[in-house]
Amino acid sequence: MSRPTRRGLLAGGTALLAAPGLARAQAEPLKIGLILPMTGPFASTGRQIDAATRAWLRTNGEVQAGRRLEILLRDDGGVQPDTTRRLAQELVVRDKVKVLAGFGLTPLALATAPIATEAKLPMVVMAAATAIIPQRSPYILRTSFTLPQVTAPIAEWAARNGIRSAATLVTDFAPGHDAEGVFKARFAAAGGRMALELRSPLRNPDYAPFLQRVKDAKPDALFIFCPSGEGAAIMKQFQERGLKEAGIKLIGTGDVMDDDILNSFGPDALGTITSHHYSAAHDSPENAAFTAAFRAVAPNMRPNFMAVGGWDGMTLIAESLKAANDTDGDKLLAAMKGRSWLSPRGPVTIAAETRDITQDVYIRRVESREGQLWNLEFDRIAQVAA
Ligand code: PHB
Image (cartoon, rainbow, N blue to C red):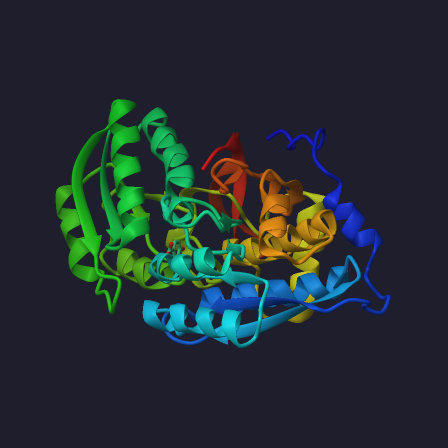
């Protein structure tokens, strides 16, 4: 695999490292309202992003462009869009935040979009990944990924690598629908045949009956999308139902082989091929620095793709503050559009037109190294637009 080119990228990352911000803040702090699911079924997303933002501040310094970055963390519980919207409203009106950030799941980001529009404040989506999100407000930008962006590469890889028929199993909400639609279209266009399309509920899913149906249909492969954290329950049933022994290959987006929980999966996970924008095993100096900084604040966790979205969200906010030298929402937004930097995942750009992230997407295989499971990248599709 060739290394991503560094030419043409802004030197944002190194500038940050060179100015650790030990100087005293002169001006008003820049308040960032960070809304995450810190409790509830999607708390792993909250824990990952919270740790990443703290690691960022510890590494780069709280003072940026003469202002202290002050994070106001709010737990929305991850399942009630009304709660997320109310917390955002309070952060804007009462706490006077200048940036909204976080948003663990699509419905929560969609519910908050009108608040960002009305307040004219940048809303940095660090996690939620349904394609349409930035279209819901001209103030939304995204540092995570989109399901279409990471699904197309695995669909095409599968068709090119001897998989003639496939089933899909996706969680039944917007990002799952994105993944299902794109997988189907790209796999069929490349000559593949869809054997079965299944959707499991977002709340309290029981994967056993779905996996039994897949086993009975005997496709060459099963494509899975589930939100971060759910992979463990799916893998348990995949194992118990004996799908691997039945000759059915597991493929998916990287969400299912989430680095937060990958190491708890048994040997059935070995060899699983997924496509995604981030692996904790990504081989670059930027990722080595990121994973070390993350472990310093969260020694028992491995950073996953949610964490890198949080880390890069902080880079976007800090670099835009420096460029705008102002905390006005419209000026910050203007500075965020079109910004490029070298992320722990590789080179990224917030496309000026769409406010969405352009990034490399990798094909990875689960392998064991020194007794631990990792997603090892073996192919790269450069600079995929969202
Ligand atoms: C989403 O709600 O957009 C979402 C959540 C978790 C993921 C991916 C997408 O892993």
